[in-house]
Length: 73
Length: 143
Image 1 (cartoon, rainbow over the protein chains, first blue to last red):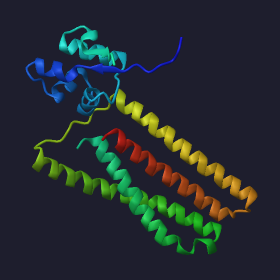
Image 2 (cartoon, chains in turn yellow, purple):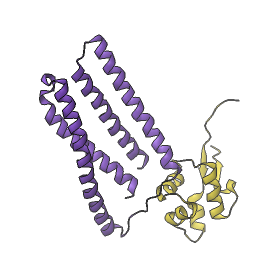
Image 3 (tube, helix red, strand yellow):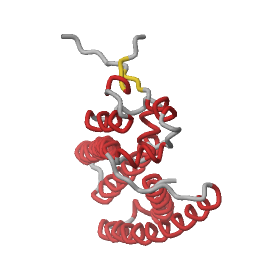
């Protein structure tokens, strides 16, 4: 199987606004990370661990594939 | 500004002040005895501890005041998985730069008959540069 880099993107920012405009700090507190980590994830500069990805999905009460997915292009 | 960026700023300030101080002390280093140079480097470590404490106090107070005026709050200090990953990248960079410095120094000692005092200084400079490069990489990650 060939090795290639997946372009994983997320909808954290959108989901935050859908959840009564939750602040980055509120989300960070909810999942136990720093606000800077949430900023980095939203800007796709950091791919979180599976554990944190699931915690984010739980925080938004949505399936993980609704939060993180592979970009088609 | 969060505690991580604050720590990088303190570390960089300390490195620059101690580097500037050491550069001023080393104008006559080729004529220095190895023992005198060793004493100077130990003194540099002592100076860096003092400068670190002073710059930590000054920067923490200055940033707390400025952050309080501008944002009205200071970010909480939380260490998470991203910090661990960044720390690992930084440690790797520091190790690479220091190893290169060490190998170059030993190479020069073997081939160019580099003196013991110069070798000591080269190793110290490699450590110093590795530390600054690590801090800059941290700043890049925390941008």
